[in-house]
Image 1 (tube, one colour):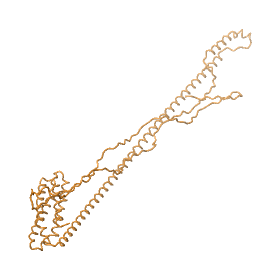
Image 2 (cartoon, rainbow, N blue to C red):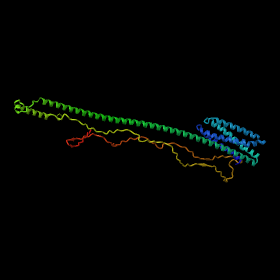
Image 3 (cartoon, helix red, strand yellow):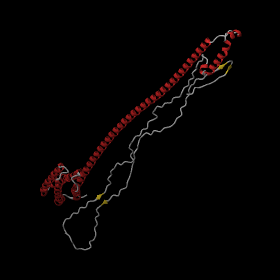
Image 4 (cartoon, rainbow, N blue to C red):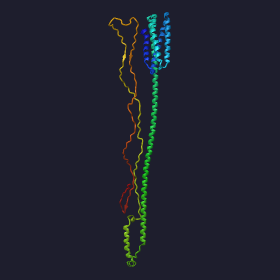
Length: 416
């Protein structure tokens, strides 16, 4: 690269940055800060190259001492305006005006370098010396670029560490929140299971109490009936004894019975006795020595209680999936074509210096991500009823009857 091309590269890049900065609005503060920082670094690098590699050579030439002094004053003025713009808020209404003033100053500085500084350096040095200066300037630019890349890499590493730390903290907080919710859910399930068990036990106790009351009532009723029967039999025995005691006794001699009027009365009394016997109820004709044997049986009482049959855990986690998408990018490059003119007539200015600057552009992909709802997972419990057969064994009393010398078993069961 020649010294001229090297020194003109800085102003060309600065002109592009001035245009981008002028197109921003007061609300685009971040964009202004980023573009201005790039512009400031480029301008400071340009004047630093001049002061380090060109000014020392020009100071040795008597004819260019005054040129160096004027260039140093311009550089000092340029740095002052850069410092003022750096301290000024980027959304200030005077920001763009001061940027325009800085652009005007730097354009004049670039014209002076092109017309006076570079020709003086090339006149004072030989081709080998100029090439040595170019190599030193390229080395300085390479070192500055490497320093910039190192600084950018350090910022990226720091940003990545900060992001990873933040994501780790968020993940830990989410895990703690999930654990807390799980503990609360487990406590709630345990509480519900305990309440269900208590309710089931209470229902079973109620059923047992009702069954016991029913059995007690049946037993009391059986005792009452038995006592009534015993009372009736006792009354019947007393009446029978009184009737026998009050009836006249025969002498056993028919003659004397006829004389005493006992033989005629006896048939009437016998008929009355038979009539009374026929009209007496069955319960009164039962013998007085009757005993009762109660036969009991067990009744199956089935209750219900709620038990924990398992836990379903639904956990949400993040899965990273590589995706790709094609995008069409536009690259704009400058094409220089030299051709023979259609006519030899000159229509514009001739024999004057003219510079045309055209910016080359490339479109680069910009990646952004948006979050949208993909699916909903609803967690609920469904209750269904089913019939289950409960099998067990129950006990009941039976009787065995023996009569005379033959054994005749008879089985009877009480059915509620």
